Amino acid sequence: AQKITQTQPGMFVQEKEAVTLDCTYDTSDQSYGLFWYKQPSSGEMIFLIYQGSYDEQNATEGRYSLNFQKARKSANLVISASQLGDSAMYFCAMREGFMKTSYDKVIFGPGTSLSVIP
Amino acid sequence: DSGVTQTPKHLITATGQRVTLRCSPRSGDLSVYWYQQSLDQGLQFLIQYYNGEERAKGNILERFSAQQFPDLHSELNLSSLELGDSALYFCASSDPALGSGSYEQYFGPGTRLTVT
Image (tube, chains in turn cyan, orange):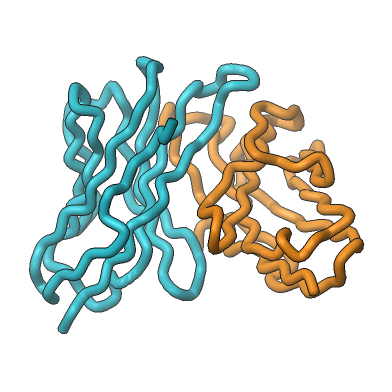
């Protein structure tokens, strides 16, 4: 079963507009972490934002915010004021089993390709 | 710059050969993760080491092995290489010894392996 689902293989957004990239996850752990990464065409994986399962506030980092809805098991990434440099693949990931021997792992979703249009 | 280093950046080798990929984690991080990213399989978790010990295993083939050394750098060994092993291999690190309690994970630039 898919643990991380990103239902939007490709998205387009106008420059300066906001965009939401969807992510849903599945875990039975109470303690877990959710991440978003950006992978531009150059290939590097850039850490964007992190949300812990016990964090009550939604995480924000500059133009990035994570819309965390724990009951719905969703962790959507919101990018405000899109820029041309935001064009990239975006991966949602989950770490569960934190520090539990043989269980601690990070699982990535299939990614969403975002294209910012001038 | 994430602080995670990987060498080499590119590697071209022939089928049947063996290669070693090297990773140095961010200063103070105890965990090292290895991932394989190929076009058809996406980003696959291979294996995790924590402070020198294997912590978790993912979709790692028996032809692949890894270890983490006392200085916390890690090596991923790929043997009997096949065309399908061509991929981008990432190392990531997390879990600083003086932990903040967060699960953040930082990636190295990757090693692009081409098997011909």
